[in-house]
Image (cartoon, rainbow, N blue to C red; front, top):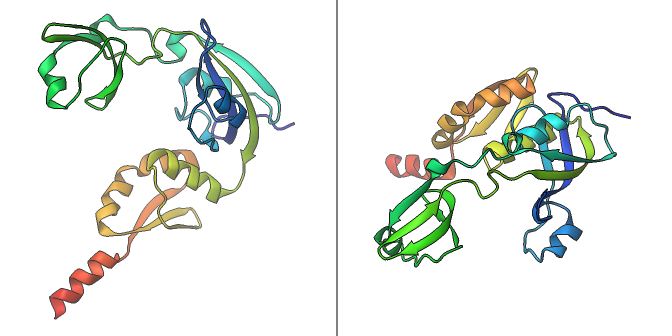
Length: 224
């Protein structure tokens, strides 16, 4: 059987649960998604082992495991989403929510300053809000199967693009170079994110600037 090592790319099927309640908080298995009556569409979950592309404890747990075998592991808060931090519970003026057309209620989870927060209480003109991750301080369990170890370099590049860019840009692999072919407006972004591609893939990331339709139209207008 194939044993997984650091830097390997793997595809996972998994179910993550809160130990105390048995509540499923994350899964990409269709039958489990149907159980919790979620509209979430199951999709492939691919990561490079040992590069913090998933929860710390799970990332480490994958090393030494075999493809095709089912595992179940338990993770303490320090290896999951961290311990609860009392300093992350803050009092916010009610007007901050009203300005965003939100009427907060106890128990409500919402996005504030790019973070998922929980409303603890509403009193007068003040709202007590918990900025801790909803899973902070909880012991978690993961049941998972490594369904595949990726060998194809293109699949690896696509997986990293999905993780770091949430997008896919054109590229080619030439010798030891990974060459992204993008417009000038995207080139700086690619250059800024080149380091993890280089470290994980062992390639040198480069950018080849190509003319986008927008840029071509701009040049055409200037020439007329």
